[in-house]
Image (cartoon, rainbow, N blue to C red):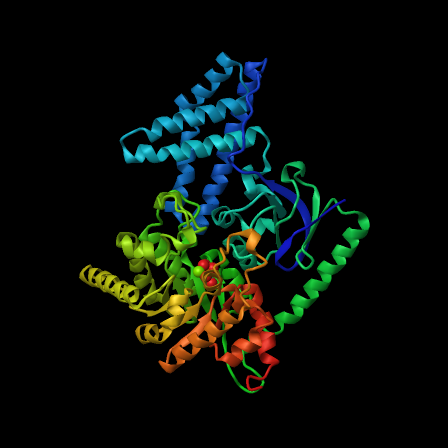
Length: 542
Ligand code: PEP
Ligand code: MG
């Protein structure tokens, strides 16, 4: 039995098998082999396994993101049949008597370099695919369990660190918990864990390489502890606690269908934060009154090219339709900072959190923004959809956005495409936006306060920096006063104001927020019923 203490980013308790997720860029060792034929046979086995995995990934992707995005897995399958590529691996094994892993990795590098040097843009883009399939082969050859998460049983994912794009690609049904060595409690990976309603620990001083796939782990998101290979006593205690938690959840379920109204009649909207249409199940299951933040940038993560207008339209329309008339607020892409996407080619920045991100990209590269706006205006016809713009700092930005929206509207009109201009609001997540919220309120339909970034910018604390977790204090009086100010300025103009940052889900502040006059709290789906309980048991007028 081995105990480690980390920091919890989501409460809950689970027990299950470990799956160690190793990084793709691990070092491949070159070793000398005796039997080239046997080594080549290993390659054949790894290729067959890879084709099967890709077939499964294709089917899953068709269902989740549509055929166009899934096609990448077909391309990978075809590359695995490329004779030049396979012969190159075999010939390296025969002539240099090297191990299959090394031959696959080296051939992958050679081919990727060759493609990258080509003039044709399509061929250039294949460099990343070649690297990807070579890494898959290496993983299969070295028996890495991360090769195919889709075929594993629900597991405790153990990793050094996880990026949002790695997390978003995972099959949520297969994850019992996340346990990582690094990461900060305010990162998007932590946010995803909360959204997915799974216990997650970060800052765990373990050595993932020394852990074995399949060993049992208990993850206790209440105490922040993970226990590997628990003894029978711990196992029995854990089982009992899991049952007790399930019982508490059952009690909360009784609040489904009830209103979010205080004992003295003050009503508040409690909506859900989501990252993809795949999260809709959690939204409906937890009886959300609407979607207060659809982080649309997750549609852009974990892929090799921009999502098309059609793919985006389908996702937004589906969300609007599934919510059947309830509000669905879609935030335009908030790429940048920790949400990096290669094909955006954002380049290296000294200070990415304060860099080229979110609305700044959209205003500088309207051709990207317009595709998303077209999809949103078209999808707005199908339900109660609203658009929300991130990282606003000035009234000029809002005016520029409206000019681009007007251009998109003209284009759609000229093309005879059905559309609707929906309610448009902004995130208040910079101190500048707070200070001019009276002026901004005149321009927009609503405010949603992004306390994650607002805390980062107000306290000058990088939310990604795990060393600063102890200083990152969203309860700081400055933040609470800012929220009050924003709500008052919105109301003076007859507009509503909500909170969609993680602070909105903090149950110790719910009563205070209601008393401040906050109109809406948009939170991880798993928090909705917990907040409803607090609202229904409190009085707004103290
Ligand atoms: C925020 O900053 O509070 C927010 C909701 O946006 P994100 O966490 O996606 O930056
Ligand atoms: Mg933000």
